[in-house]
Each structure stands twice: as structure tokens, then as C-alpha cells.
Length: 110
Length: 112
Image (cartoon, rainbow over all chains, first blue to last red; front, side):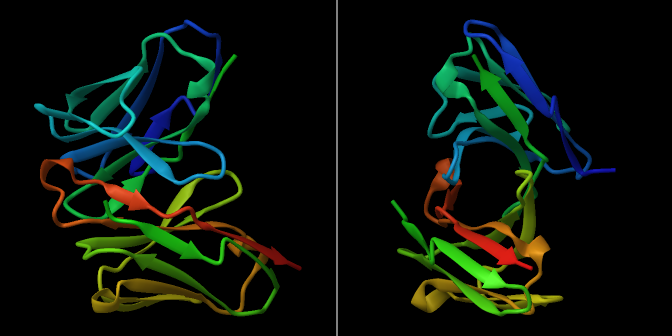
């Protein structure tokens, strides 16, 4: 089984809808991250969490919120999706330095 | 902030050829990782290599931290090596704002 899983893997939604992307990990890591990737670019950090009680904004947090339900679970929400949030979203975990990525969620906002 | 530059931006190889990808960074780093993003979008960890040399099959990597660069070597390339190769670094001075800084990647196409 994969160490870092993301659901859904693909999602098409409409402008204004609320969307939740979920991430689970079995690596036992405290640190979890959400990134987005736009075509032709590297990854940009949305939010990160160093433990269940710690949530921090990344470089592009506007329009997003997160919830760290447990050590193993970190969810990303788009409260009111807009077309420029169409992107590939990755969840990652780390113990201290090396980060491990989930398979990604391809989100399209029409 | 720290800058990460990768070269070349694009590379086309014939199957069986060797290649070297480069990652330059502008400041001291605590962590450097190489990733392969396959054509389906999945990010695969290749190396965690803040310094020194590592090898894994046909791939190897060397980071010279004092000179602020890292090299990824691909030998006997195969069509499955196609995709984008990213270098990402983590600065030791970011405090609570620690994050990976990503290069723009090298897009590799290996032709049969």
C-alpha cells in the first residue's frame, strides 16, 4: 500500500462550489504539507503542519483552508472554488528533512 | 530568498545515451532533493542528498554544498526516464517558515 494517499485523484467542479481534498499517511511523520502545481512550474506551498496542533500558512494560502484531524490526516478545502485554482495538488509528509509525496489530485474548476 | 536554477530546461536523448542535469542554488542549504515527475504527474523521490554522492541503479547524484550545486547523472537512458526532473532545496535559516524551494525543472524526453 502507498505510504501517502490522496483522495480524490481527479475532480471536476464548478465555480463557487466547496471542495475538500484529503490526505492520509502511514509513515508516522509529524509534518504534513499541501502544495499546488501549475503547468510548467514547480510546486508552491499552500499550508503546512508540524504536528496536530500546529498549522502554518505557506506562500499561496489565500482561498484555501486546512484541517489536521490526526497525525495521519491532513485535509485541504477550497471554500468557494474559482477557475484559477485549477491545478495539480500534492500532499507531502516528512520526518525532518526529506519530503515524500502523494500521487496528486488533479482539480479542474469550470 | 534562495534561488534555485536548473539546467538545461529541456533535453532530448536517444535511448541508451547518458546525461547530466544541473541544479545551482544561491545560498547554503540544509536539504536537497531530486524528484522525477512522470508523464502521469506523479512525483517520485530520487535522492535526498544535501552533500556527497549517492547512486541508485542507473541514476547517481552529487552535491557540492560548498560550491552550491548538485548534479544528477542518468546513464543508459530509457524511455521510462522521460518526464520532468526537479531539484528542491530547504534553507537552514527559514525558522518557522521552512519550506522546499523548487527549481523549474528539466524536461527530459527519451526517444526509442
